[in-house]
Image (cartoon, rainbow, N blue to C red):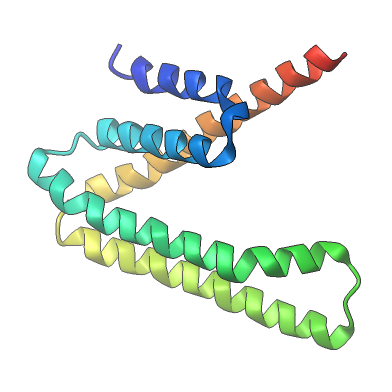
Length: 150
């Protein structure tokens, strides 16, 4: 039952997708927090130390994605770039991806100070599980929307 609640709330969140992307992102974030907290079985002390570290990591990744990668990917999709510009884009993408990797390495180092290695591994598994649930629900949502149009 405990595991079912976050998934049900996630489903409810998807039904209100049309209310706006920002609201949806906040709901997804809340569900991710609940999901991870449950999967890691954090103590109050661990949670108090874990969430600021994890939230800072997430903010850093989002900053890299929004400021560095999204504009580049938009330009890459256009397909209309010179060879010189393609080299520049590739270099910037590789730098951004290296920065994301370094942020992940730093996350692990920071988390080792507050969590056991076992819980850090559980975190990765929980993130993967959450992302899979999210993708599955998104596919269902799109399919339902497509079926309504037909």
